[in-house]
Image (cartoon, rainbow, N blue to C red):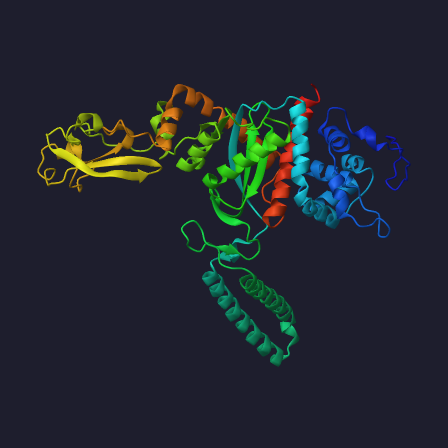
Length: 517
């Protein structure tokens, strides 16, 4: 018969544990510990505490900051999960020095950092600069829309909120009447339903009070078109934003990344889903941060800035020119002009899509029309004149001159099928970019200048680097760090959480590159 060693799960054992031994050299945990203890000045936290003479001893800000940074690096966002990690995970115990802060302390600490987080971010950025991790020659800008701790159901104009309040009151009246009828019957069998109904009544009353209090303390907000925009009763700093996965109620997390080692140089959570509106504050923030760590008076002069087509506006292009930045911001149609993407839509309708019927003729294009500079008209292949209809039509930031046949010559023209876009069209017209419509003395618009810049061989090469500069940063924060949503409300607190994630990203770069230098 086999013999086995005896075991007892209830057996007590005394273990000698040195917490510091569990922080391995070269690890991210060691980098967090060294940076917080040696390089970060947290003296600003002193003014938040008032226990000099009386009161309980507080957790040291360095302990709480280390714990939160380690938690965010592991994708642990909730304060209760961070509290649990401090009790069970030896690495959290080591960085916390054996302390076990509770979830309310952790949550309150993050909220209290609203005026201090930028200074901590800049101190870490200064370390990156001293370790030669910044090039300062090529910056990439992009944004990531994330849901916030706000209810999309409670968004709307004041008129829509009043309508929602009315519906809630109707529902409340119905529940109260039903509750009275149940009480009159006085049957124990309905006790469970009564309890549920009481909870619903309490919840609906609270929702009505929230809407009424919000409308009492706030005024309707107006957008660019001076029309009222939607407000949100749970977090009015957030906004509805369209994404590839539907409309969310959240924030647009923006970041500017240096191309050398993908260090985040500036970051901010915006309550505006339109990327084009965020370029100006992001460039201003970039300049301020670079000046704060000792760069020149105009640290962005001559630097390359790449951003996707969502940032393409005449105003943004002019701003970059005024800042002497070498910007590459394409328009929405730049891929259509690039021969490399000529067949990008061939599988859009499926692999085995039915072949399209090809016409036996080629449609007439602009080169088939003859321009008469003296009379400022275009002559069609049949000799009819297309006269100027408007000299200033703006479409997607590009100014066009529109030429059109003024009479009914196209109706009985034998070349009609080869010329008009569809059978129901009555007249042929041409949309000519203003810079190429026979008016060489007119300066190119900023958008057209940028189109020429992007379409050049150098422009394609430089803009092609944007994808490798900034997209891995958002991939690291969203998927490796599991930041799928913000857990705080109001822009100040959400911005603090976003900067903490950007901070741990930069510390991770220091661990990989900086400590080895």
